[in-house]
Length: 191
Image (cartoon, rainbow, N blue to C red; front, side):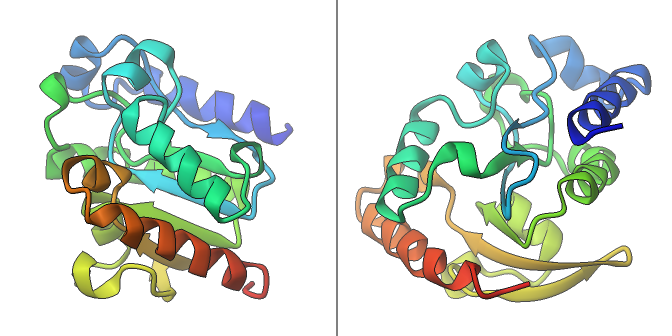
């Protein structure tokens, strides 16, 4: 099977296993991810929001627009990366995903990463970052490369603030853009 078929199969397994049935009941659809399945960089957020749930693609709402702006500032294109979330269904009222929801989707995210096999994972926000880096303090660790081992898999992870942080706090906007620009230069040399 090719990578797209493997991702499609993984999505079918999530549905067949009825992962997080309460979330599924409130969501419009499963949001697996979007982008280049041969990407060197995978971005991981926390969960789909309203627009993501409607459109079936991650980071297409206001946070996604700012993400696109940050990618452009770092000379990256959305079609060159892959983007997903830990939790694949929208939590009701855009609430934060619960620990048990993140835990339920974790094996599927790991499988997704195995299929894509990126050089670097960039986590967006504390929910996804803390799953890879348990002692994460986003204000201290943002923009820093971490080598982590999760269930036998070795990953290079760079935690960043979630793009929504800049929507709620304008002073974060420049921090996020600077982080994107600084990481874009270091990613090519890491394997």
